[in-house]
Amino acid sequence: EGTHSYKVIYQKSAAYPYAYFGFTPVQDGIQNDFTKYGSLRFDLKKSSSDPMVILMKLEFNGTTETFERQVAFPQGIGNWQEVAFDFSGIPEDKLRSIKNVLFFVDPSGTTTQGHFFMDRLRLAERPTLEMLDDFDGNHSLIQSYWDIDGDKVYTRTLVSTDKVDGTF
Image 1 (cartoon, rainbow, N blue to C red):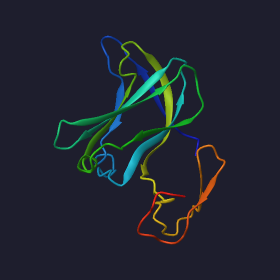
Image 2 (image 1 turned 45 degrees about the vertical axis):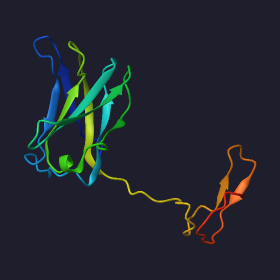
Image 3 (image 1 turned 30 degrees about the vertical axis):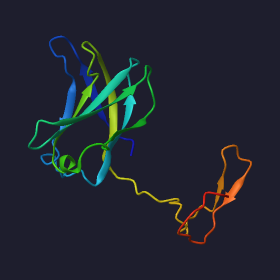
Image 4 (image 1 turned 90 degrees about the horizontal axis):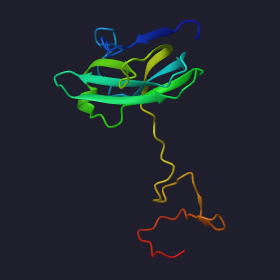
């Protein structure tokens, strides 16, 4: 809605080398089964001019195995932007048992400080894939194809065949 956001203030030093925050899905009222989701997303507004990195770390129940993904933000103060941490590459059995979701700010820096705003933290459903063409002649929406330099148009026949002789 734009009237409230979460302000994250961080200050890392030799005595406190980590700046992180997080949540535990079940404890915080969210199911810990993320299998129907494709990503975790939020809107971010960076308020300090230094470059910044946010690392998301997923911890799973019953194992010490973790998943990490990071997003870098360039130097300068920016407008609101959507940040997405994609879950592709995480096995479904792991997504079924999320223990903790942690966010580390500037994980490689040792003496950084600043703040940013977060809003609209959400789990995004996996996108629905729509087949445009499988080239099997099964009533695809796409009927014409161009060659690489665009000077010829090949039109696919709607007649189903069992073999192709390789000629046009």
